[in-house]
Length: 82
Image (tube, rainbow, N blue to C red; front, side, top):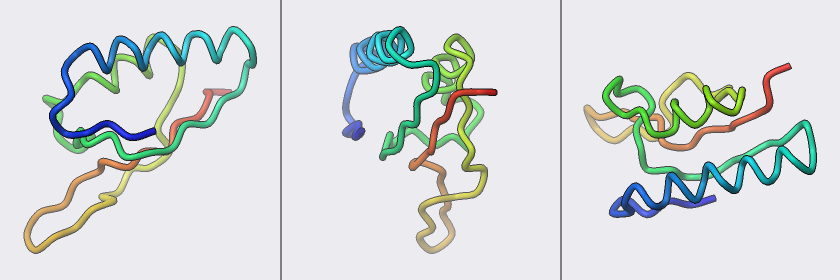
């Protein structure tokens, strides 16, 4: 999946609904992509909230984009918690 940096909250609502539909079909899912929301920044909670509600986890814990003095985790790999 890809989330352009300027997308609004509607993206996150649609993303959550898509996850719920996928979990209705299959108990195990894998999601990869570029979400453009730094998961190393504690104030970014859209994805974290969705993962918590749907019992999913991001297996990536280190920065996925490093430029100069900046490092971000914007490319998660999300899996079903087992």
